[in-house]
Image (cartoon, rainbow, N blue to C red; front, side):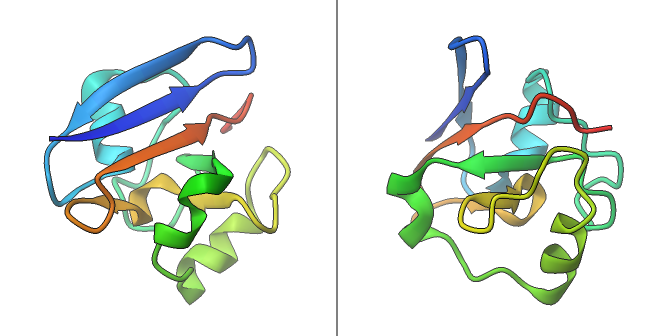
Length: 108
């Protein structure tokens, strides 16, 4: 099992176990993680799964695709050029077995 940690602005955090080959968004929605909406179901079409990836995990991430890049310009919370990603585009598995992200204050 992979591990995902969701940090909140009030300094609390939620840790969830994630099966391999499951997106961070799908794991968050399935486990009821607060602040991750995922309205489009993981199609990179709504930006309601915006997260700020903690710096120590950035090098392990795949490159941002064109669709994700476009949607990150539409987030309600400000885009961080280095850390903003859509959780639906981050697949946990052998290449990414743990991740920590900060959940924006608002998604919609």
